[in-house]
Image 1 (tube, rainbow, N blue to C red):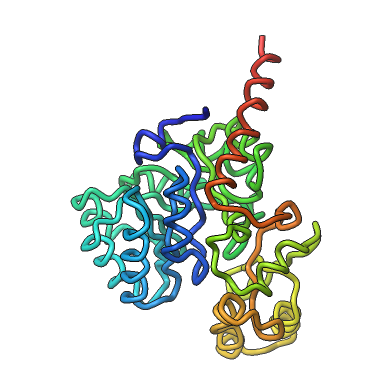
Image 2 (cartoon, helix red, strand yellow):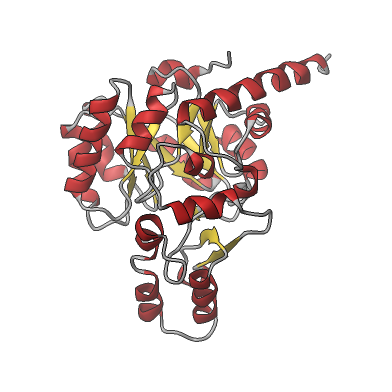
Length: 314
């Protein structure tokens, strides 16, 4: 079995994180991943604090194992949620879209392991100085907000820039991807798109069907003009947004254009106005299965690949 330092640090069986996808990664999905031996992460996104508290409590009724919460630091509720994770004794916090420095002391005093998502070496170094427990190096192949560097280029550079454990994210959906990033220096993986097919993932059936029928060229990136690029499935909404983005629509109107689009996709499967977040590996997700089976399948496929690679090293 593949074990790494992140397993011992967090008290998990497998070095597998589930991405904290806003409105998707709820308490039920996070609990299923944690119960299956990985680290389930509730996505706070732009949700209000009480929603996040409710999802934490839901997860606690399903599993006693460690769970995490991903806090999107641009959220208007970030301050509130930063306190809620302390009150609810969450074991892990992952962060994105901002600098968590003002919360770090309080989280660390509460015994929370803080693992920021980083998309550059500069940010990795800054988070290391702030006292992060580990880092998630997320390449631009991932769904949702993305950076410029690919996982293949980003992960080894982050590993060289810090002495913290590094979890690789972006473009990983099976054991081959897991083995590849372990060879690059990572000690764990984070998957988001792969868990969209989990039985315990409660996205609208239309959303899940789009993932299961996806092709290799099914995603596109929008939002670069505003400095917040997002990868999603090609859809009427994504195409309309791209047209507006490069058609001269004022920034305020462009921001309003996308408001609520993810929630419409997740909860209503709205094909016209919904934003269906997805990474580039969607075409590799071909069936529904329990979250625990996904974790086990990926790790079992990765192990012989890593052992086989070692045979070539003299």
